[in-house]
Amino acid sequence: MNTNWNYPTSVRVGAGRRNELADVCSALNMKRPLIVTDPGLAKLSMVEDLQSLVNDAGLAVGLFSEIKPNPTGENVEAGVQAYLSGKHDGVIALGGGSGLDAGKAIALMAHQSVSIWDLEDVDDNWLRADADKIPPIIALPTTAGTGSEVGRASVIVDQAAMAKKIIFHPKMVPESVILDAELTVGLPPHLTAATGMDALSHSLEAYCSPQYHPMAEGIALEGMRLVKNWLPKAVRDGGDIEARQHMLVASTMGATAFQRGLGGMHALAHPLGALYDAHHGTLNAVLMPYVLRANADAIGNIGVRLARYLDLPNYSLDGLIDWVLQLRKDLDIPHTLAEIGINDERADDIGVMAHQDPSAGTNPIALQPGQYSDILSRAINGNL
Image 1 (cartoon, rainbow, N blue to C red):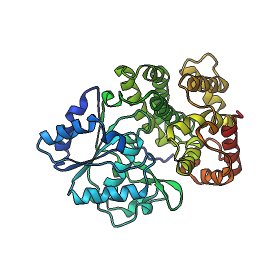
Image 2 (image 1 turned 60 degrees about the horizontal axis):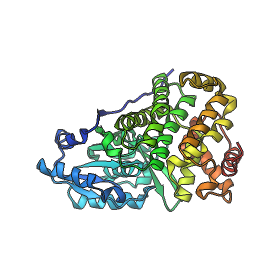
Image 3 (image 1 turned 180 degrees about the vertical axis):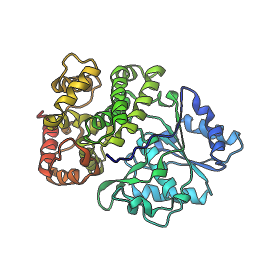
């Protein structure tokens, strides 16, 4: 068999390691880095503290924060203008998925002559970019969910098409990552739960993928065990640094594992996020049991193996789904999409969009548009 495998980058793990940021910048020859983050984080003291750390080391740091929770192409364009006008030479991507994805995309596009949509993850589009013009990226996640800090892609909303698109280039993976649990302490319980379920969805879909990648499969297993053991603790006590640190690692593991592929959860979550501007982690969490049930014919044995590894009471796919349902209940995750304002008015359109989404290609079953529409309707109405 012939296949290609990639693994992440340099990762510094531990509480307080954000204090090494200036050293990391210097090691990457950054003299004028641009911090890219979201508007909410930009108002917090952590951003000011990080700016001071870098400035005190003799570097000139800028700040860009005009990005939406689901970053758009327009956000990236504005960030590129900020990067160029400030004469920056690298990006510090700070935040959850929005800050990390936007920061990576801004670095990618800073010196390119092609459109960002020319680099959508289709075929070998990434070859259109000039790799030598992509500046270095440092990533500091403030949520434990997306794992975008070790990803080679960004999910960006094309507002003209009303669709989320995956923008890919191998050099989008940050050259250095700092996993500092203290940066996640201020995350409220509902977002800790939603982002943690996003991390679970990455490992779970990667584990169910039919692609051959045993190393990613093993990482996915351990990532899910970490979520099982530590997410409820992180939600109950936001100041539990040990739980927070394990969840950051689980998030990074999920994104490493999904080199093996994702599936129907993400295939549906992407168009739903674009159309309803809903939180990505919450969407995956709500969709999770419905997609597992839809894939039952292909993942029965996988469910048994996973239930055994997680030491669930019932070693079966039903036991796995029961655990997911109980975990969601314990974390106050909604059971239906209707509870977060999504209806079935565009179910047929979303079914087509999900079928066309790149994540659908590694779903255990090659679901058709009508089947995706049916899953969506079930998730809206709570018909598991």
